[in-house]
Image (cartoon, protein in one colour):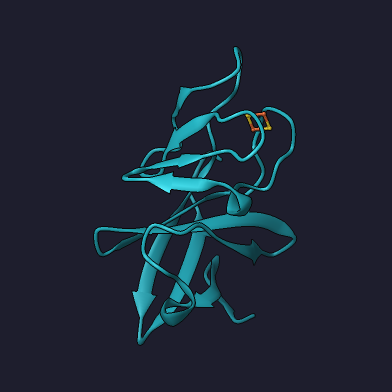
Length: 110
Ligand code: FES
């Protein structure tokens, strides 16, 4: 995958369906892309509770739900909204779409 100043191309916009999580790789890291209301968001792809792949989960509006124990996270902030006690938030990534390609970069501090 192409890389430029920390940005990596991770998928084509055409690969995403609205409100369907899509798994991708940022380097060696699993990430999940979420398209909702015309915007694309990128988050860590592994649930911090017990290691489920978030791309196997479900979207409900601006929330993504883990397939294993139903923790729900805000796709805009990564905040855990509901779920097993102690479930951490999902890391978030910056996203840009250029010429139909999705690029992501780790947010500072994550
Ligand atoms: S693995 Fe995601 S809520 Fe348990």
